[in-house]
Image (cartoon, rainbow, N blue to C red; front, side, top):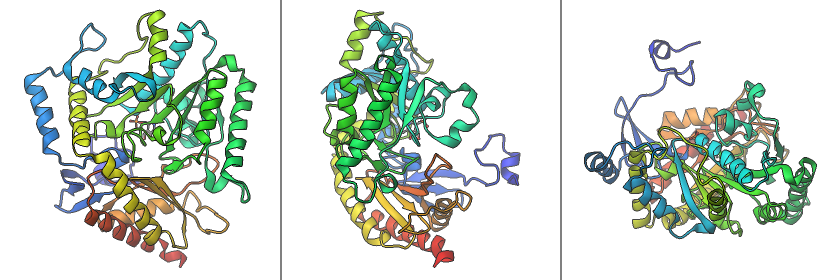
Length: 454
Ligand code: PLP
């Protein structure tokens, strides 16, 4: 049944049966509702608002940019602007892992599209135009445009669009230890099994046809803040190197400090990806911005080849978005917020295990620093999932909201495993007291949702 407000509204809302709550402002890490009530945002929207919802310094930077600089420059023309140059410089001056150039776009999905096109162009420039096949992972999510969906192993989001999706993409298993690692299997053996599967897929397709392997460094919304087991990305990087395949890491949701280092891959013992996508926390949600970071070797190939990038959008590298992101990143650096993420993350981790962990329907708690998920199951021993129709996590989110806590639940049927989870990834500025409040409200919401089963 369609809600009356949604029916009357000229906005096409995402869910027709539910009246959305109108947000009229922000206060620190809280959202302010129309009725004056506050909701603690424990997930930064979909892991975006890492600096909370009111940051006067960023508001000032945005206003000052508009007053003193330029609102819009077409980056497809021979122009640049200070904010864009400064932002790229701030992110890449130290060339992390050899990444030395940036492309800024408006959304994560556009970043994925740009990363795939860049990989295809790279192989073209290197005289291997047949390398157009990508290997991705099942139950992955890299965005919602057709290009990004091609490499997303998200079942329900692909379903309607099968006819448009490329057959030049194949999928291997994700590194989902909770359900996929056998009882007596060591991490090492699990990694060997997954990497062998990846290598076999490379050989099946033909190494000279594979352009790249794409993966989220820490899986976000489909598998719930899932870090790979130790050694997984090292094994993947080695296979990519062996067959000269580009490693594309999607850090749109997990990157930019959320896991306690600027880039999540820094904790994987690898030299870095060849192409990386970033977004969400890049601009902290004040103005939309995402990006692609590329290794110097990609730039070199394009340089000696066509001498340009065969891709672009009207609003690419929008100066205002770059100015807002620059202001956000400057605050993160000045206030040592990534170190703080690490410290607060340890507290969040121990609170989650202590207060939430020992519950009958809590199957797994996993994540890193301020990027965590709780996976719910009907039975912790057999790991039996709730039916998708029951939507346990959706009920937790609803109950949490009624208590004044904003959480993100999983987004429907994503593949073979029903991963019923909520994300807990509070802003980098969350205080100790707020962390306690988040845990108390979360616990109350889980208890309320669990009542029919206890
Ligand atoms: N990649 C990952 C890992 C994501 O989590 C998302 C969004 O949730 C995207 C890509 C797509 O980003 P956007 O929604 O900004 O297009």
